[in-house]
Image (cartoon, rainbow, N blue to C red):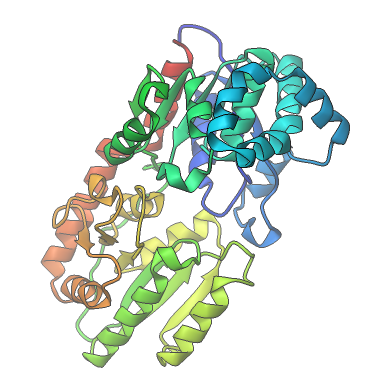
Length: 399
């Protein structure tokens, strides 16, 4: 490292159920000598705080979004409105409203950065967290960077403003890079790096070789992802029903919770599970911590995530790192992670029949299951270990 780095690490609603990647990355950066201060917009709902490291993360996180009328007025008075006028004119009152909502948080971020000697902010989102970082830059000049984790349409308005002033950006797939270039045009930063998310391949590993299911033994299927319609859990339930109808015994466990802490889409999935007659076959585990996820992966014969759209997929990486044969959907950027037939299987999204066929193939062909087990592990170790993301951020921030 060419110079000592003191970084503000900004993550929305941290620590959420899918945030283990961020926790790994910040630890990797600190292990390489950087100083990190963690910021977040607000705390996630209680039902989504599930990791054994969550309380340690909360204790070191400063939450920026809070009622602060005087801070809002002070920040709004200090903003360079001439610089913002063009974006507001183009995107209208909705962007102005977002700026007003984020102004006090940006002012607080500036105060904390000055007090702690922070010289760079990295926003791991292109939604409201990115706007807070942008406004902090407009208020104080502190440089910032962004990571794009999914389609830009998922992150709301003001994208040209957020990206125009960024020192650099990382984007997790080539597909998303192409989409960003098309949308941003000249507002794309000069420095943009393709850097996938990653996993701790030492932590997510197995001590004994993968063993495929024996004839007549129930196929243990594990899925892990937010309980949301786009994650395709309902398609996986339908595939399990098809497998049972074919006489293939299966057991399914789904880890994850909905964004309402169990009061939202979970109830729809519970009803669907009952309608399909899977009460003795499938279980919804709720949000579980990383150690429990790893244990489930090691016990499973196959990991399945049937997302309708997935930018890349840390859950796939964790399964592949554990050498558990993995089935994903050919949607979004997943094919940049899973090489079909080599490091896992890809099926069309929203296709329970194809999903059932893929599970059945792994269940009935031990040699093929073993090949996918090895191929998945090799793919992640080579290209998707978490240390790569930390190294990229430190290199780019140090430029």
